[in-house]
Image 1 (cartoon, rainbow, N blue to C red):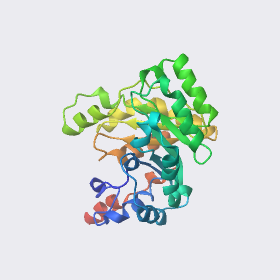
Image 2 (tube, helix red, strand yellow):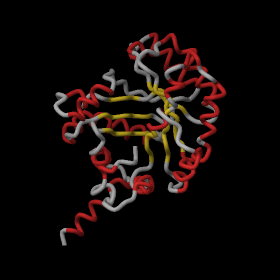
Image 3 (cartoon, rainbow, N blue to C red):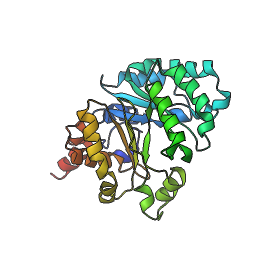
Image 4 (cartoon, rainbow, N blue to C red):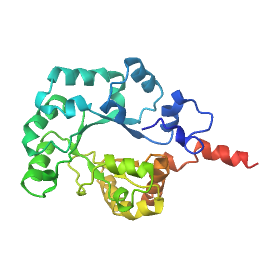
Length: 273
């Protein structure tokens, strides 16, 4: 997400208008998960407005709508291709398309998954997130999935929610996040030049550090190998997600615009005078 009014006073200045959130976000972050596409298609004029706000190196990772990802047995090929074409104003800014499969989609769905990969992989790199436990068996089913993804130069999304589930659900935000996010084994997999990590943390930044620390060396290795890791960080209601990102980059010791002073912070400092 990039449009979060809770970020006013930190990432955003207090007076930043809602329609400027993406422009403000893209000054400090070079990618974002487009989760809203999972539920509804943005209007064509909205896509054009987003494209007008972006620097050339910014990248979206949009989710394939659930009407496709959760109905692979009845996949309408032409409708899926039309969906991709709908995003044509943003094609230069799309780094990956994210196919999030439901927990019910197991090994029996690999043929249907292959169909999606065939349809889209020549147009855009894909990242596939699986939630069926069979795909974490480190044996037959996981190997079959990984071979299929490699065949189409697709990536396998790594979701790390260990920090989220390490604390009791003692707030409405934690209750909601723990109810919605999956709790799965973490396999640090990279199948392409674009590994993708989704880290689901808590509002305790020090606690998050304990869980993401092993990722620091992994990300450094991928960068040294010339790969382009896509790393996304969440907190229960995402109020502190920018701070979590910044802390990770500080610990990674990698140059990044997120380390620069943010407008809301500068505003606060000026207010002290």
